[in-house]
Image (cartoon, rainbow, N blue to C red; front, side, top):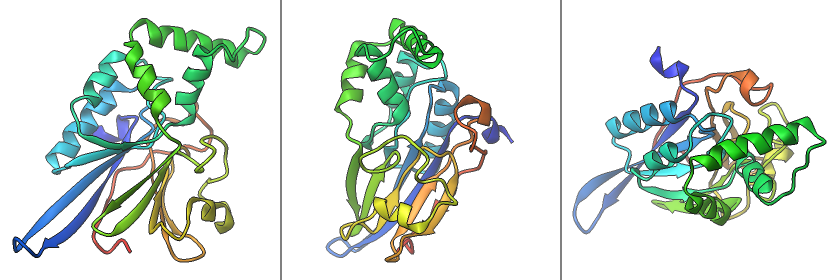
Length: 231
């Protein structure tokens, strides 16, 4: 279908709470957007779909820019949605490192990143870079008593293969502490729901970015819905 062609995936969290004082039930729907990678077309489609499903807020798990061509047009789309949490991905860091002069002309990959960053900056308001710099590697959120930890990869390391789906549980325990009921991360572009050694849930919403673009472990997948039984 049309959705599988887009380089993006989101997850809707349905947090139902009973408002005792008003006697009504509120549906809290959170769209989790991970690994946009500069694809404005995909972002536009996913935002439209999330709105159709009643998303009331959005969490971003990083890798907003590159290698796709999205620049200010991509951020203009993000401006239209209520983003209440965001973390910084490794591709975001690559853009910042290129701007900070950390790359040279000896390594072909660094040359490519310098050129990609030059392209991005030719069509991007500098305030967007200030925003990227301000993003943390980890953010904590609480919704209806459920405590979430949001990262791109590990809490102190937004790159590497530590959290590939087949890795040992002890690797995933690095996402968890005694103040976390569910850890949500991106980066590996694989949809995943598993448990830490103490029973907390770990979620990755996945991505449908074609494998040759970013890393060799990617596969496409749809979005999914998880409900109030997430504990």
